[in-house]
Length: 128
Image (cartoon, rainbow, N blue to C red; front, top):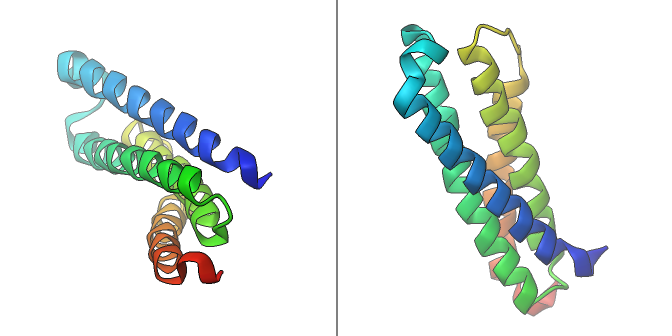
């Protein structure tokens, strides 16, 4: 499994980046008709977080190509993926009126864990 983490992180990062671009373009042109004005801020936060973490996944994938035995970096890629799905997905659903409860905060905590794991992997280097 560990050999597949780098390409998977890059593919997921690219998909997140592409879908963020599509959503940004769609809401830029038709945002007022697709999303109620009072929910648009939540949608834009979800979009911004997805964009940043698409880049984080691409960088993590590149790091994993260089050092594929880093358990912390593999875990960071997984945390970023799950975190975006929960956090941004939760905000997207909330922006169209779907109550998602605790999903969004759980996604935020998962994203934070991903950043911690990325840092831990950098500190540990080859010592893991």
